[in-house]
Image (tube, rainbow, N blue to C red):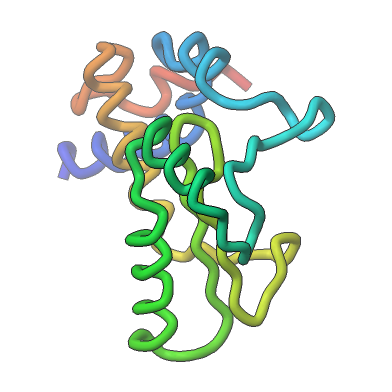
Length: 146
């Protein structure tokens, strides 16, 4: 029971502390693009647009992604996994290399459901590996006094 409580507490801490944990803040400052007010995300290709051959080659050279295969995956998803609203956004090294929307627009709210589990598990792994969090920690050890 105590071990499960520690793990649950660790998840809460990861959600609260991840942006400033360890050296993640420093890495993020150099990896991610500027905020929208300064130009926002860089695009290798515009949403729902097919790039010309030169741009496809540039995406392959700079980002190691075959745009045609990425687009084929999007087409397969549209054809085989139910209907309705869908989107696919692929970001590599801070640049959007593929962006598709079906029955929605880039500004629509997108409910990500269980995708948050990936972020929590990655956050926990980084906190554990940096030594900022232990599976035996309790949440009160990481929260400021109120």
